[in-house]
Image (cartoon, rainbow, N blue to C red; front, side, top):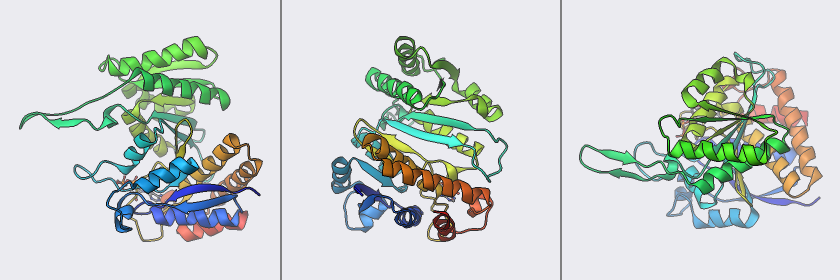
Length: 341
Ligand code: ATP
């Protein structure tokens, strides 16, 4: 069986624990993947690099085109720029995709959530242009380009078409940010009208959209958002289906993709062996499906299918970690998956 080399970035905090669990499960599933480990984040500094995002890590992803990444810690209010953000920008991974669905055996207020968040990953308030203007005044610049707004709109409609999704809803604040968010919705409207009129299209002001999301999440299909809104609404939607332990993600560009869970490095529980590896496992199932599609490899699709069946089955039988109301630790959950393969 042909093997695909995939860059593995363990990351910080719970990162090594959850990536370790995924490696163990992939080995048991005989996934046709060979890992090449590279570091990023505080782990990179600890392994002797003088950069949080070493050039060798970026070059490895450029070489192999696909990576699975654990979370990297981001200092709050000071220190270096988020490694996660740097990586998305350096590799031009402009589309963040986060499928959010109700999981069997994870009771929440809603049972029928099945939506996908698409977040523009390269600009907006994440452009990192912040200045101290005077002793009193600080500012942060929100940047939007027609190129990036059009690109993410095209990507989203193409995604919806390929996945047989019916509707795209843009959440925005163009009533206040008339120029930047105005550009974002005009680009989405334009792509819809001229190229994808068969996909249903809707625009909602984000505050009202958030209210409707927590009242009737089942009414949403694909959500398209600029960078910061996408970040916030991803966690809101995670809360609808049981939390950060069950939401996977992918950062996709034209010829590269980095798969990572939505959650962060969870320093509060790091090193205790209790982190839930499911979100990263689900992200790695997305990775296998990506390889199946882009490299036409049916073996990857087959392993992805059996992994999904295994974790759905484990959850349905109540085999889950503590964050989901179960009593398994990281290793126990990994073994529950392996036993089902
Ligand atoms: P960072 O600074 O890296 O974003 P954080 O702790 O601020 O880290 P998250 O890592 O997203 O943000 O964690 C938010 C909360 O969710 C924490 O209480 C954390 O313990 C919990 N959490 C996140 N991921 C997991 C997981 N995989 N398993 C169990 N609990 C998790």
